[in-house]
Image 1: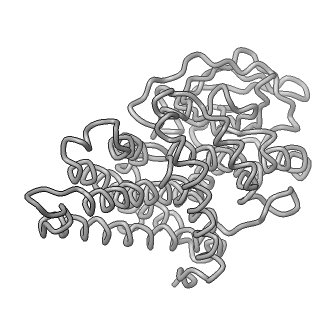
Image 2: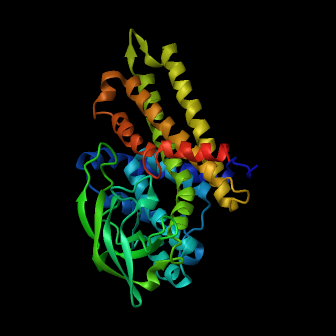
Length: 381
């Protein structure tokens, strides 16, 4: 069994501080961010002001060295207020995880402090148009050229495309499907081009785009890990980031339920509050139970990461946490719209935005169908 996932007094206090910060600085901007459909530098500066950009980075690189459970608490509370802003918190850590876990000492020393301070942002460039769930089918190539590599190809579904100044890019360095992939840390100014930005139903304040490499020269010093180690690095990274997507999903579900409960206490029909309706009470109770179950799975997976995954449980635990929590987020946010009736279907209230934002948690960092395949493979191995 993993370590206890009961939060400490310090973690409960951290949640209280995060809740207060998000209610004051993030939630009031969420509707406008969604409406504008643009990256919010105001919320990013707020995250920097709270030193949240370095929360999950080691102390030696200017970070706080927080546990993944602590990072999950932060992701949950930010997502409760604004899911797009929670991606600002999460994406650079995702992009830098391969560097922190596989990169050379020099690479970490050069770039990790920049990202931890918020001076730089880093995106994770893995997916391609014909290589999403089937990562090993990627066609972006890196060819050796003296003490450098020449990158050609494109990546899609890149969070923070055009905003990040660093990209962790996975490219093919030999024909071998799995052992022929290598990772590189690429600076945007070396020639990374943004082909287009997607128009999405949710996460409208978080740019998602297609980036292209036309003969981009990358020093070998910016290779992450060994040649051919990229696929291993990619999967290792996703195992450790999926639990925080689960935390993001828990956050948006909690935010939707909290708003709906407040609304139902105030809204009167037939001379009494909606909250007196037993049918709605039971729906709300089901929402609360599912959220708490999802939170438990998320914290357990995070605790396994913090332990160093000593028993090899992480792939299955992370898949369960991400899959279950995101399914809960979609169900709870949909119920929250129902609780508000016709008003829930308008953008006058936040639950319709939360429902739109929740959907992506079932898709990115491995669809929930892929998560079920991961779980089933472990069950039948």
